[in-house]
Every structure is written in C-alpha cells, then in structure tokens.
Amino acid sequence: MVEFAKTVSGPRRKEFEASEKKVKIRKESWFLQSTPQGDFCIVYAEGDDVPKSVAAWAASQDPMIFG
Image (cartoon, rainbow, N blue to C red; front, side, top):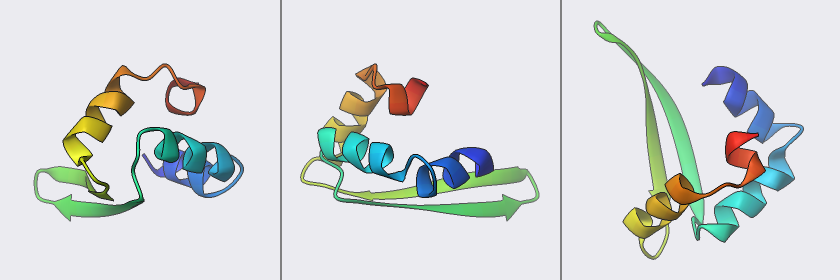
C-alpha cells in the first residue's frame, strides 16, 4: 500500500486523478492505522454516490488501477 501511495502521489498523480474523476470520486484520503491485529488502510472518499463509484472502480479495467 505504501508503494501505491507513493506512486499515485508522485509520478502517476495525473493518471490517478483522471481515474478518480472517471468514477466520480471528488476527494479521497488514506490513513494507515496500526493495531494489535496488524496494519489497516482506512480510506475516506467523497462523491455523489460513493457505493456506485466503488462499484465502477472495481469493474474498471483502467491501467491506473491494474497497471
């Protein structure tokens, strides 16, 4: 997850922003939470219909997500 975060906040930022725009996510924030059970990534997203956006993301063949 850390490498993905570095990639989308650096060299592939514009691609990531375009991908978020396609699935209609206006804002997304990630937080790393360490717990006794291990580390978790907490994701906060804003959009008109976040469940629909997540479904669109999951169905996407966008190279930003899978490339």
